[in-house]
Picture (cartoon, rainbow, N blue to C red):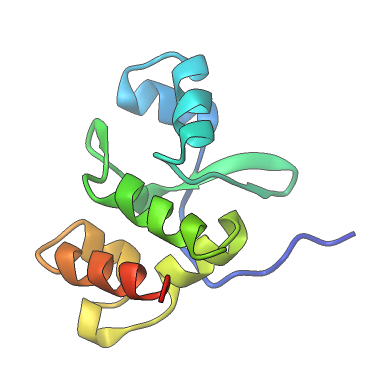
Length: 116
């Protein structure tokens, strides 16, 4: 069985490195993923997080809200990842990039519109 191919980041962070970068325990990282505050997918059998979603020592501010909106619209984690990394020049490249910049509200608004 092959894992789905989703357009996305070229840089992934394994969960232990996410834990170190955020300065929290690995249990807390797992909790963030369960709560929908952080997105992790399997690549080559290992759960990883797109590097762009972890800015400095925090999760991107608007990411938890956008993930909630996407999940409420019926997206699973792979589909949410695809949406975040779908090329969109009006958002500065894609929604994941927008969430780390001044277009975060527009990305969040677009995610909200998916529910209707």
